[in-house]
Image 1: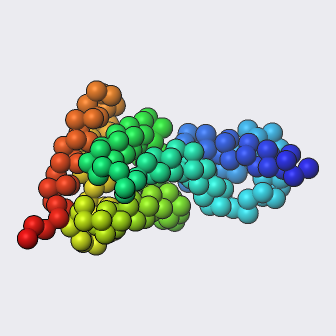
Image 2 (image 1 turned 90 degrees about the vertical axis):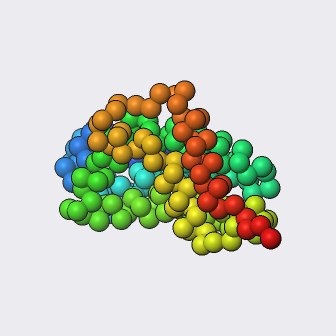
Image 3 (image 1 turned 45 degrees about the horizontal axis):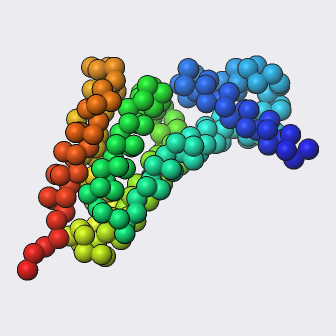
Length: 202
């Protein structure tokens, strides 16, 4: 029975992900999700008490399926430049995918109407940011980076990774990033970051 319930819950989350992506958070309804799942709203609410709670489950599943493995690439004992390059290529490649761009557009559109933006940030980007910040702190402790605020360093690096492309993608100025251009973009971001955070010389 427990396995059945978990399978049912997983199906609800997957269907909800499609509905949120299609309609946006505000316009998506529990009725639509229930219809696509093939059950009643009462059944839906027995698994999730609100649309917000269901959205959080969708975000968490996405983070676990796509982003955690990328942040797991951060090894402070490995070569710093190479680690940042590999991480950056995977990160930029993922956030520039059409489904991610669409999700971000929907979130920005809904952010002023509900707390969905905050919920997404706390369950997704913030967790990744904290993982990157911990990596930065370890690199600083090893003398690979200048000792600075770890969260600011993490913000700076992610900002550099997004600088050349994300705004244009979100605004529809370009449809996608050419795969061959990702590595050079990341290399430039890594170079600027390492110059800015180079350890102080005596």
